[in-house]
Each structure stands twice: as C-alpha cells, then as structure tokens.
Amino acid sequence: MIRIFNKKLDAEILIDENVEWIQFNPRDYEDKPYVTIEMKGFNFPAHGNKCSDCKKFLDSFGKDSLHWYISYSNKVYRLDTKHIGQKGYSENEIKVTMSDYNPGTKLTLVFHKIPTDATELKSLLANAVENENYEKACVLRDLIDEKN
Image (cartoon, rainbow, N blue to C red):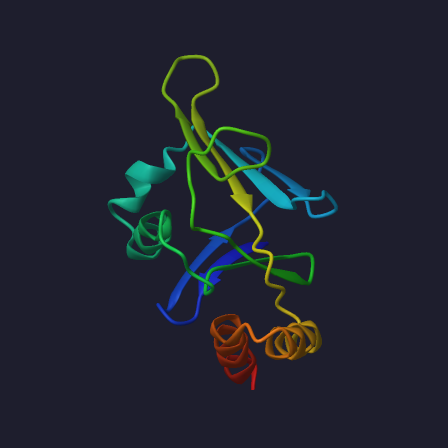
C-alpha cells in the first residue's frame, strides 16, 4: 500500500499498487530520487475536487513544505512540493491524459533532500550550527522535535 500523508494537515491518501490499473515505479536509488504513480482511467485532479485530502495534496504544489511524506515497502520519504511542472528529468509532474487511448493520470513525485531519519536530521543540524546557517538549523530542530 502506498501512503501519501501530512500529519499537520491531517491528510492521508492510500493507493493500492496491487490493483491492475495502478502502476507504481519507485526510483529511490537515483541521484535525485522520485516515484511515478500511473492511474489508468482515473483523473486525479478531478477527483481532488471531491476529496478533501487529495485537494490538500494538490494545493500543496508550488508551496515549500516539509510535511508531505510518501510511505511504501516500510520506507518513508519526505516529498518536495516546492515545484511542479518543471521541465527536465525526475521533476514533479501531474500529467492527465484525456483520450480514448490510455487515459489516466501520471504523478511524478520528487523526494526532498532533507531526510526523515532522526539520526540524519541531528547530523544535519550539527553541521548547520557549525556552519552558522541558523535558519536551516531552526527548520531541522523543529523537524527533530516533531519526531519526538
């Protein structure tokens, strides 16, 4: 089961990748990790008009947020929602195809550079303080506090 969630907004989207009309391709091993989720015959943005959790997720794109996550195969990654529609390899994309041939939605979701693991966050915090990058240090401190 794929789970996209935001605890601050109390939003959760569950996608069963085992149904035949869902194709899930994780690329968490790439230099710039991402996943693609293809939903054949399903218009995700139109569904978002009726589903409040999906609408919250769609509305988050274009806004810098550290609170959207994706979970699958007992792994959790932070999503980077700051940009959408960028041209290039492995950038966020929501592509809807409306045709008789292969209609549906393809989501490409890029992982954020800031990890979800508390140990890694503490290491980044120490580096930020050492480099006197206090703005980043405050963000990291808040993320560590959320974990506890």
